[in-house]
Length: 286
Image (cartoon, rainbow, N blue to C red):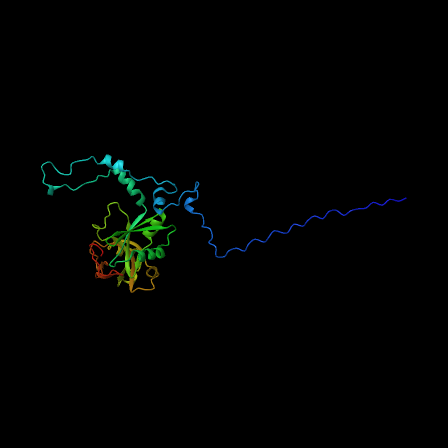
């Protein structure tokens, strides 16, 4: 006799509905504010160095003061401003003494600097700065400072850039010479005299046999410090005039001719033409 076993199906598991889709983003919602950089920790990142800091300290990240207030107080003991019994109208002029040791520290950042002035023409600071960038093309940046009376001081980072600018002239902007001279601690724009500057000079009527570099340079030495002879003059292909770059002192009267004394021959006057030296005051180069 066979027996049958009844198999009941397993109970059904109720299905779980899928989660609803996320709501669409609200395109009109205001995005969250970005984090405030002021609130972010800076860690050990130093702030960027200024041009002034680079000049004074080089690669150092800390800029020490060149002089402290306490040093000046110690160098200037207090003294009465009015003499005993003097009238108030006889008040002494205040005086501040700067010792030599401090003065040397103050001058150190300016050792790679030049003093410039556009002769016979005023020029806007930004126009000048733009022209200098195009003309000089130094390896490093430089700083231009307007000190008044038409004078500017230009500070360079390296002595190489400073030397290249001093020896690379003459420079002419708007048909006017740019006088360039080394910076000096005693310079003051209110009392400065006309500077020395490199100019192109033409010697007219030089005899053909005298178109030699040595003779032309010696002629130029009677006007100032000869710097270089024009390349066309050296080739001898143009003998209407000899052209030389000469550093002249604008505080002195410039000769209009040089006499060429040829032995056993009549003396020859050589007229001198100074290129682009317009009507300027030879006392202040204004």
